[in-house]
Image (cartoon, rainbow, N blue to C red; front, side):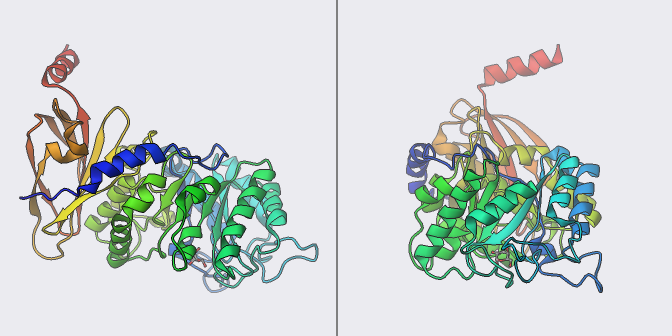
Length: 427
Ligand code: GLA
């Protein structure tokens, strides 16, 4: 196979090294991408608790999710935020001007829910909007930023997802996101700030990511994820098409957010779930699952809890990966990791036929330098396979299912040091 490596790729890594030092929101949070659960994609705005008590947006849903997160190993795997999205509010503010949750669905109030979630060793996220109404039409925060930030702090909230519906002008949008960031900081409570600022701004002007990074811990760039392969593909394509703009902005404290993981829902095949998990790891994306953890299948659970994939996502260096090239309906993505390692993902975008053979030329990874003395290569997805020490000019044959991905980890090692390592492990 002929490989047309994107010439910009190595330049991009260079610019990236300079930019990723750029100032992040100074709240000491999200040093690695946020991990947790968020209700929106799976439970949307289901407010009918009389007809559907098991699935409606109520304190019970979040308490049950918190219970399962502890009981079923999610917390141990790193998923720590239980996040409320839209439709938790009552239709008006209280007489005192304060936000209040819907009285029947959250009868004990958010403070009590936060106490419950905290008692499980987890954190609670909540949702509001920069404009006068949320996307689903509940009271927004416009004109109330300080007051709402204080309410969230008083309730013990740990993360705010701040949406951008009904924002008025693009200037008000930017001001609103900045003001809420300051208001959260002024409460003195450490609250992760999840923005949708560039998503709403980009139709009017090019987002300034250096600035967005100063105010937000993560930010949505693109439309809402749906439970379908076409949705996942569109997010992957948008991300690759805009990587020169967005990749340099990511780093400890601030991340591009390609939206929720829909693994374990209805729309993705096994291979498509693997592609989402692998690429969200390469993209250093927040891992916010939107699924029903009370009844998830074993394969989806194992994929979401795969420690080696999570370790790639959570790599402390915090470099976001990128697409190196696409050719013949294959895509090669890579991400630099700590200890001079690299992750590589090969996606088969062909939606017909059998698994296809891809010959990975090691010297393409990281511009050739990581494996210049050879690398120890491990396949992590779709199943673990130790591929051993590979010399610098190795061509590794891989088999990639239609719409699936093979995820690899490459650890630099000379043959000699690899042999010494193997030998000492025998002794
Ligand atoms: C917007 C956001 C979604 C979700 C809904 C809620 O569409 O992008 O993630 O929060 O609003 O109404």
